Amino acid sequence: MPIRKDTSDVWPQEPQLIEIAGIVPDFSGESMDSGTLANFASVIGAFGAAMLYFRIQRELHMNQQGERVWIPLADWLIILATLVSLLLVIVPLVTLDSASPNHLRLPMAACGAAAILVSGYVFAILAHYRIFFGSSRTGPRSLAEPLEIMFSSIAFFAAPGLFLFILGR
Picture 1 (spheres, rainbow, N blue to C red):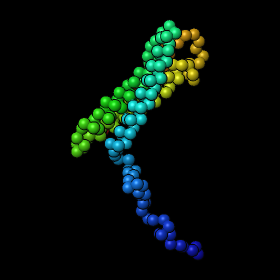
Picture 2: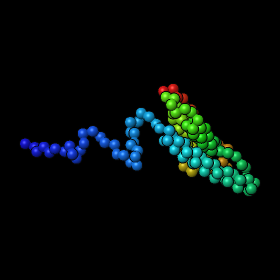
Picture 3: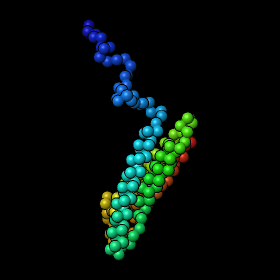
């Protein structure tokens, strides 16, 4: 006959949430709070600003050397992600009435779209420089490499698709 030990003092029957610094985390997955959305948008905005700073520096350097200066297609993904994060997440969070039941819907949709744009940027910029994608191509780079166009197009179409899907839920 097996020995049964009472473990109720070791393993509580209901899960307990640990309070950290007075904050009880919400793992229900049913809602997103404005702080999380603002943090997400701030990270995307900061990343975008940093990338644009380095890209502008590079293009200015290329201009001084008499090279052709342009904004690659991949960079438009990060420009758009930065603008979406600032204009469709941060601005609504600080200007819309938080008492409205749907006040987070637009920022949530915009965060999803910005995440897709930044994800597309990673692949598109690698394709632009022929680092992992298109390394078999030789000669000078064009304004947009074929695989850069493909990755950028996927992101440019998927981002508004997700945006509209979230808004329509």
